[in-house]
Image: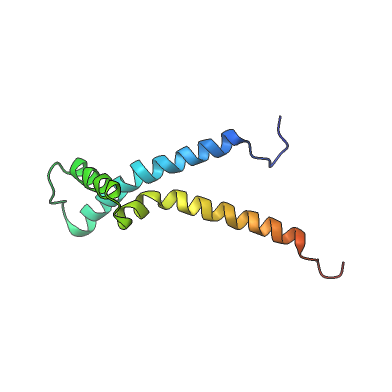
Length: 99
């Protein structure tokens, strides 16, 4: 059993997979339906399926906008973890006032 507040590798794997699913499955669907509500129906063939084919195709060709959109949840997660680790590291090395 792990100590309270201690994260296991299984937790990090589950979190990473959840964010991957959010970025690659949920986020494009949200973008499609938001675009449909804001700008009208998607003009490409096959509706949402055509939109997803275009997004994934653009990502596979190295389009930075498509890749960034799909990777955004993972990028936010990694940034958050790095910030927390730096905070913990700097908190240990900086002398506290009045000590």
